[in-house]
Length: 167
Image (cartoon, rainbow, N blue to C red; front, side):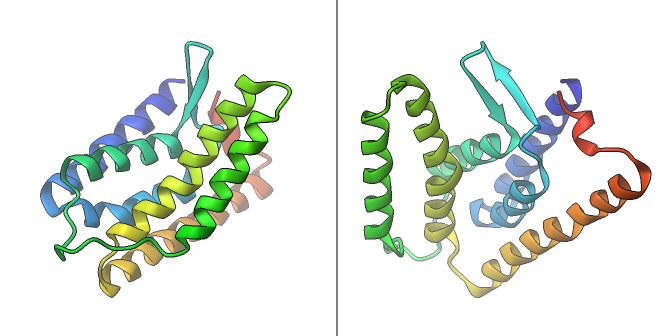
């Protein structure tokens, strides 16, 4: 548990530092790297109600940074691509939640899906304003995808699993 909390603190401070020094758009490549690298098992339970995974922490921190200082370079509003499909998907998820037998569990799953997928998509679609930033975000994703197999090789040949480090 202490390892997860330390990693979460590193994530928080690094994203906030980059946002303070270079702006919100500069935090997106590192956020993409963190979203790829950290496993689902990296989580902190909150009062038995829900778990805050490192990915959700990154998402919540990005939302907070975007609301508090995420200025877009161009003054005009940017439309989110695939807006109709996103709304249709959200409506579908909401209907499935309302028709669920266990409403509270479905509501938690709905909030999880919205945070884990839709919020990230909207943030990246709205705040990536240049090809340079897009290349950096893709480099962050590629770096995460390159780092993960390194742990996989260690796991395969060392009879060890990185997941054992997480509670």
